[in-house]
Image 1 (cartoon, chains in turn cyan, green):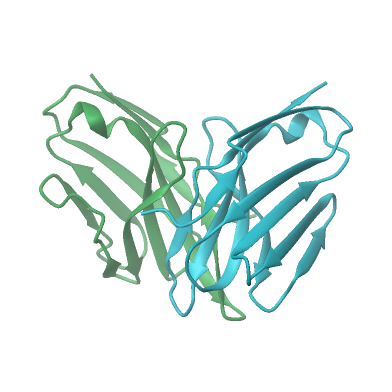
Image 2 (cartoon, helix red, strand yellow):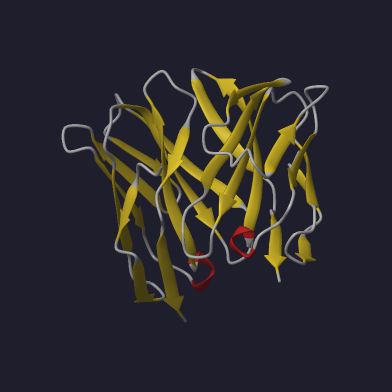
Length: 111
Length: 115
């Protein structure tokens, strides 16, 4: 069963704009991770945020975590056509090495 | 940079046939995972190994699927007999516990088409 749910399911923006994707989950977590998947390929780890962290940055990526609302957001700033991919959040249930992925947000960045 | 290897990358098989996928995790990664990803959905865990032992196979359809990791290194996932509904991407991942966190590294996947 999947725990994370990404929103929106699909997002289309112009190059240079910012893209925001949201993830909601159901149970307590130890950490939350975001992954990217290019069409027909494996997943690539982007960023991890622990349950005691509220915000984290990595290059053009900014992730926030609100454990009271059981939600996270991924912001990609100054998007590029190469950012076109599906983005998944995955939660590591507390004290359990059992990653559960959402259905993903399909991001299209138009040049 | 070390990567998770999977083969084959693509497989087409007829229903009722047997099919096998192979995965070689990153060296030193004790935990290995097999996921199934149906088009348009997120990966779903099929089986998780810690070294050679199965930790979680609750979502593995055991009547037709089997997985092994005999020496705690590479792993094989088998489907016999294959059904039309098994068409999907099969992803292998491995992880290492670092600072209390398991970060998973994924292979390129095997895309299975059952006809």
